[in-house]
Image (cartoon, rainbow, N blue to C red; front, side, top):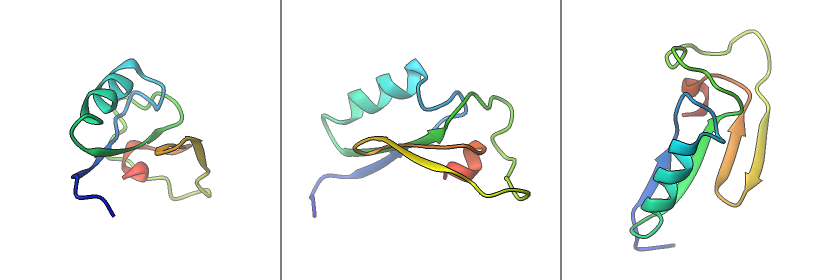
Length: 75
């Protein structure tokens, strides 16, 4: 267990977006960071939920996860 804050980073641009990578990289100097973001770009869909099919989760690297659903599904 770490004494550092734990920060969850997510977005609606997708897990590989430059912004989420830049933000999570900068925060790692002051906190433990976990990224969970959509597998693909989901702009303007941040409040939708996926209810009609199972969600798929992938671990891309340590503390970086993608979900094939909406940003709200990721949170």
